[in-house]
Length: 116
Length: 114
Image (tube, rainbow over all chains, first blue to last red; front, side, top):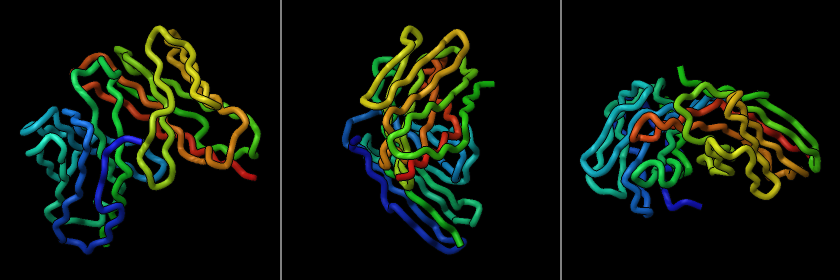
């Protein structure tokens, strides 16, 4: 199993709260990703990073923000959570350069977020 | 538009039976195709990967096929076990970006009954 960790695994919070979802990997991968997944639906890329101090928005618009100060750490923050943010959030990482590992992404266990 | 379509959406089989899941894609330029297994409440785990030149790949009781001409793939599960109950996701990677963008299907939810 890949060495990529997410905390918390489950989070239930009230509307308007600020939250940070943690993601860490011990594989030394340069690339990291955040996906959002609703039940029965495909994963949608919301943020990615090529490396330290690099962050980009993904395909799905998201009110969340990310930071990449250290290679192993890629936290996601919601400044003011709303019920529409209720979803599962999956973090992943892959090594660079792309092509040598066929872009295999290793996924964390996910954080199930519920905003009341 | 790059898309990945999977069928069936859900499937119920009895323990010990075989089943086949389908994946059609329109991703171009194609790099590779993976099948992932996602247990409930967990992240996806890679089962097989196939590049353009490969048309079959096995991993234990899982056998994936790829027809790059028709842009179709299948995942065959032999002698199913209760632990095979999960969502199986087809994921296609393109060659057109340094990011190595992945395109995900919605998955087939497989339930294995005793």
